[in-house]
Image (cartoon, rainbow, N blue to C red; front, top):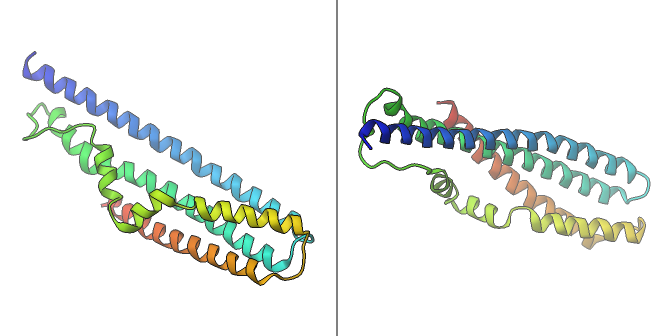
Length: 191
């Protein structure tokens, strides 16, 4: 196999990686539109509970739902821009010499998206988020909602409101940090 055949195979490999990443972006866009349906469902739950749940519980739950949907939108944005940045900063420079018929420089890595993703997730917040995310607060929020429904709108409960406050603070912190990282990726992709 001569050099031009090897370079052609390399180019085909990169094109396959490009196709996989653009398909991944398409899936993320589809999930982004799914978050809008989830927001509409949360609004329906909010309106349904208007007269049957304690107002403070409804307010805490509504705030938590808004934050979780916001976090989901930011997460999808983060994932899409991660793919865009990889294509722009890693894949394109590797394909450019091959498209021009030149020899690629030095060591020639391919299929490097997972190591790239791992490097993006090295900061402490990002690593924590990927390991734990919002699963704990969401499960706890569901338990509180079921408990409130079972109590059938009993009077004000201080413990319940403290738990709602903690949940909302946690989700707010995760959403704020996710916004920071997603905004950074968006700026990086725009360069």
